[in-house]
Image (tube, rainbow, N blue to C red; front, side, top):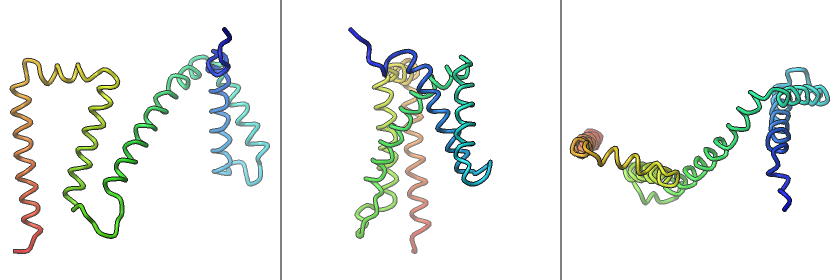
Length: 164
């Protein structure tokens, strides 16, 4: 069975890094106008040379090939967080949630996203063992102490800002 062209090693190791670096160099030169205005051909030629030099050296090329999946995953995680953040703190005429509730919900969102990512990647068992192992007594007491101290600061801050 034939392999799809997008999964071919030459495409992944040579074509995609070349196109990425060429596009980035060309865009940077166009945006900064480092070589002058209306110098598209010169900017394209420099982008072509830098892209060709990149694919000639396996070290830098492999760094780019290995870094791009991380970029894609991080961008998707950031997109999901920003979408959910927009749902929580969206602008509306009548502010149904107060500032403190928005902060609490954003904190819950952040913790939920981190727990979900740990679960999906398979690291949740390691984290659960670390917090639930022999040291669980100390972690539970520390968490309880942090909640109490946080509640005291929250009450004191609200009490200081409200007129009496």
